[in-house]
Image (cartoon, rainbow, N blue to C red; front, side, top):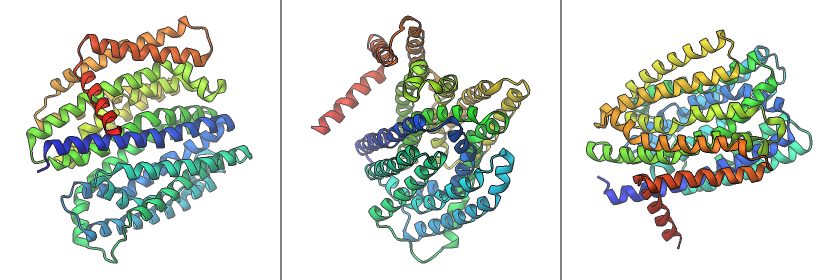
Length: 487
């Protein structure tokens, strides 16, 4: 059984490097997105938005939930890794061939002939991803996010440089395709070279059956979640002009650079850590509570703050032509605010081997979201109405996830809400003050944004200090600890 000190050290180091990866990979991707937004048209981003769901679904098939089963396994051997690797590779090739032959029909659906070649070339990243799944599992089991950070940084920088050169030379949407394909290709090459893991020439059906029995429910859950996370690209692409999809696509990408990437960072670090103490219910509950409170304290003000400064942030970063994206971005921030909390809840179910409940909850939540989307469409409430449906669904999902996770670790739903409430109220107070400050500053956007950021940080930190919020003290101590290590 891992010692508490070791767990704390692993968690801190893992989170630190995972967030460094967030800053490097997602930060560079965000910068790249901003540069390309000034070189390309909304229509170019709209074309990429149309094929986003197909790439996401294909990648979910490739991961198949077996990677999570390997992470959870106490002592997987070479044959375990090799069996899962060959299955992932077979699925990736199979999925690619299906998408290759269905590309013309997808182009007809959206009435965009360009999609045929765009989809056939972009989908090659699915095969690249199949080669990296086991490589990442090995690193995650070691809680080695430092290596993944370096790989991600090199891949993003090199592929981004090529994309910018292509955009400058008038290659339009192909610069976006090149960036995605090259990034995954470089990641694959570096992980294979750095990890030095080579599969055995064997496939053990009994091992596959063991992992698949755990993973297939996560696969189905992942498919459902992926479809609904990306279904808006299909709906907007079909019902609205392609430029509107471009505005939505960029708003979603900027939101995801902060929201989903941070969620993934928290999820991939906490899952192996919680898995290592799955048999100690008291320790599991205690660590879960700390993670929940700390995540809410850091994440709530971050997302609500982004929504508050959006009227200054979006035109400053992307240019005045992207102002229609502002309202989409604000609503998406509200919808994404709870993602990390939900991720931690769902990790508990996976750790406790309740993948059956995981799947049932996913189905139930998506039925609710389907009803909300259908209502938004028939009421003709536009893109804003569609995103509002996602916001309502997000809060409903929090209730469902938290309620059932609470039963597994003896940490009641009301106790969880009570622990998150102070951070939520502080974040709302801060974001309201920052948002309404827009009316008092008629100055250059950069100056206004700087003032708003300083105002937001001052209010949040000041209230945390005055009200003696426990997470504020923990955050300060964590920063001091990291600073000492750097010295």
